[in-house]
Length: 444
Image (cartoon, rainbow, N blue to C red; front, top):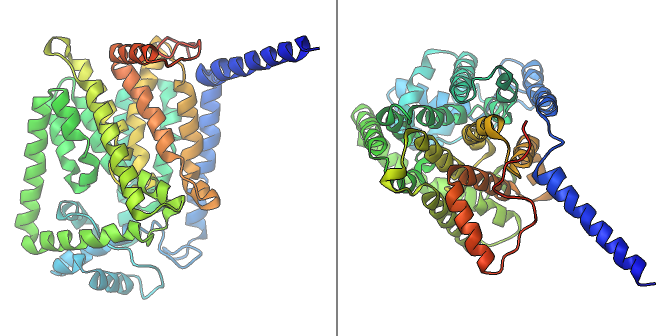
C-alpha cells in the first residue's frame, strides 16, 4: 500500500520540477513570435490610457479637474517663476504652490512641489516660452523620441521596434508628466558611447546631477571597473552644470534646494506621497507596517548589498578589460539603480530598458540563459500595474523583481565570477536544480 503514494509523490515532484525548469526558468514556451504578440497586447492596453486621458480632458484638465500630466505642473510653473525673476520662490513650497494656483486659474489640486536641484531648473527654463499643453507635449514626446532612438542603438533589429515602443515605461512617464525618459536617455547614451567614446559617455552620466540619486551606484561601479576616462567626463559635465546653475541662479537657489531637501524626505517618511505609489525597499517595508527606522535599515542594507554586488561584478584585472566590457559595466550600474534611493516611483524604472536591451541582444544572438525570459516577461507584465498592485494589496514586489533583473545582468556581465561564486556556494552545502543557471537555453 505504501508503494502507490511513494510513486505518486515522485511523479508529482518530477512534474513540478519540469514545470519550474522547462516552463519558468528556460521559458521554452515564450518563443519570439509569442513574445512579440504579448508585447503588442500589453502595449495596446498601456497606450490606450493616453487617448482616454486626452479625450476625457477639457482645456488641459482631466475629469477630476486636475491638469493632465500633473507632475509637469511643477516644472512649468518653476520656469514661469524664473522668467518673472522669482528664483528663490521656486524652493518656497507655499509661494510655489500659489504660483501653480494662479497659473491654472485656481483649480483645486494638491501641492506639486519642486524638489529638484537648480541643475534641473536650467532644463526647465524653455518651458515658459510655450503654453502648458504645448510645453508638456513637446517635452514628453521629444524625450520619448530620444529614448527610443538610444534604445535602438542597442537593438537595431527590425523586430525590436515592437518591444521598444510597447515598453511600459514610455506611457508611465508621459501620463505622469515626468522626466524619467530624459534621465534614462542620458544613462542609455552613456551605455552606447562607452565602448568607443568613454569620455563622452562620462559627460552623459554627469548630466544626471539633475537627479543626483540616480548616480549613487556610479562611483563604486566606475572605480571598480577602472573607467578613468568615464569618471573624468562625468566630473567635467557634472561640475560644469553645477557651476552654470550657480552663476545663473545665484546661491539663493542652492540654499533653497538644500532647505527643501529635508522637506522632501518627510514626503515619503510621512506618506504624503502615498506609499503604494512608491517602488523602493523603504516603502515596501512601510506598506508592511514597518517603522521608519526599520524601513531605513532595510533600505541601507539593500543598497550596500546591491552596490557591493555591482562592484564585485565589474571588478576586472587590466588584462581582461576590453571596449565591450564597458557596456556590461553600464548595464550593471543601471540595473542597480532601483535600490539606490528610498524615493523611487515607477517612472524612474524606465531606465531598466537599457540593461534589458543589452541582455536581449545577447540572448537572441547567442542563446538564452535560464530565467532570463521569465524575468523579462514578469517586468512587462508587472510594471504597468505596479501602483494598482500596491494600492489593492498593500504590497510592493518591485524590489525582488528588480533584484532578479540585476542577477540576470550580473550573470551576463561576469559569467566567470558567477560560476566561481556558485562553486563556493555548492561547497558550503548549497544545492541547485539540474537546470544550468549559467548554461544556454533555447534560442528565441
